[in-house]
Amino acid sequence: MRHITFAILFATVSLAAMAQKPEVFSTKDGAIRGYDPVSYFTDSVPQKGKPEFVVDFKNAKWYFVSAKNAELFKADPEKYAPQFGGYCAFGMSRGYKAETQPDAWTIVDSKLYLNYNVKVREEWSKKQAELIAKAVANWPKVKSE
Image (tube, rainbow, N blue to C red; front, side, top):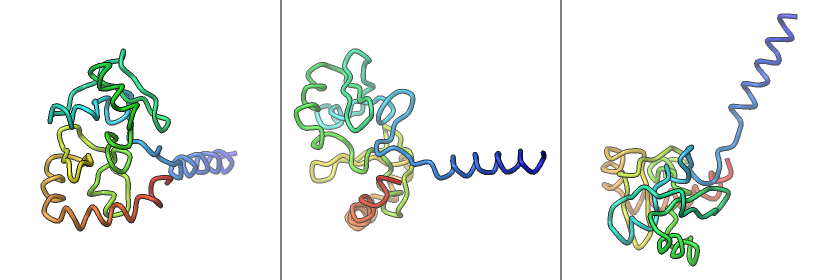
């Protein structure tokens, strides 16, 4: 009986470890921790979205500070959504998904990039162009893992 219980536990843990992360970084607060992706572009500062302004995109709930920002996003979500599904751009350059913090952001060539934290963003910015190219190459494979 003990061997069967161990086998079931091992199988459960193995399946959980192999579970795929979604394409968009989300928490219980929504995509990118519930922050409005449009606000990074329009206000040059991350702002927490409100539940009354929500848009479903890529199987995630995106929150906005206003109806105007929600409409801008709906009209062109690829313009405002962060690169790599909102996962860390530095991590993606190394071939893995890592969570991000709203204050660790950069806009490069009209694209929003998020990082794990401000310290990682500082490291990432030292070789930004090279690391973006690596992340872009890794994303097609990693996004569905």
